[in-house]
Length: 446
Ligand code: ADP
Image (tube, rainbow, N blue to C red; front, top):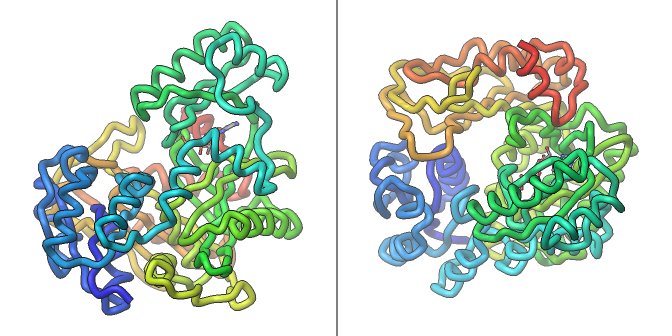
């Protein structure tokens, strides 16, 4: 096993990885920007190295600085966390070229799944159903119009290099397509440096359901059930739950079987997630994430398996610690993403935490790097805490979640806690009756 791991990330996820390392007796190295001198991940790590100024491109995305920090501190492995460099195939291969272990999949699999056109092609070969759409990228409006006529309107124009819902445009007719294609191309080029776009049928009322996979690259593949991430705003997940209230036992079994069979055939290694849209009893592949995900704790809560520990073990060459038959998924878990944002306008709200009280009790877990007196910097993602609740049933989970939300005090900044309090009281949510557009409709209602 590794002796020292460098965590190339910040915030709650850096802390999450630190915790797994500590439990395994592995020493940790934190890296941080000057905006994060007082961050909790820096305070708790065994060692820390400042890698640059606040802008992420100069610090958390600064590959030479991160590799130097690993060399100076004598780390033997690097965990990229999520966001930042976690889906950079170049980073993964450079880490290995410099003699460190990369805690994640092979650079080849990261590259394949990072190009959504290639990923979709791979999904078809792996036997995963996909959303009907263009075969490969579309170069211009004329090509897009040909495909749209075959697929049927409305269509979604998506960026091949996409992520975070960017570079996506819905077109309801040919007229709309004429502006959607250049708009998506422009946004894709600006955000991802790759202007390639492709077309998909736009599903009217799908749910976003994804499968958490662990694979050791030695033939061992398991799933930890599915997660329903349909509560979204601007294609960003807000709240996730497992199991999905939408699936019956036969559908769930089919979904988990499709995902594990594909991962086995791919020869994948490490943790990964296959994301699907689900509508009218059918599943369609949308993408695969070759990294740890923000919402991974709900799968841990129902399975009892520490996903980060398994990532560390797999990267060190160990086989999976579990067989599928040994995994019992019990009860229900929900995660609320708490952002430093105004709960109505969603304007960012960085600043000093003047008072802080964390909820506790049976079945309550808070993953956060906040503390009283800490100042949330304006430079990074607004996610500041994840409230994760487990119960024996969905109803118990909801009752516990309402109580925990009520107890959570984060003063000095605005947070999305009041939004979550509204959601857990909304009858459609209580009934489990929602799709990926439900939240935006709900927010537009008042
Ligand atoms: P990204 O990489 O930008 O997150 P995804 O392909 O994962 O892009 O899609 C993000 C979200 O966009 C999905 O969770 C879903 O809400 C919506 N979406 C994607 N594809 C479709 C589609 N074909 N029809 C309707 N909604 C879609």
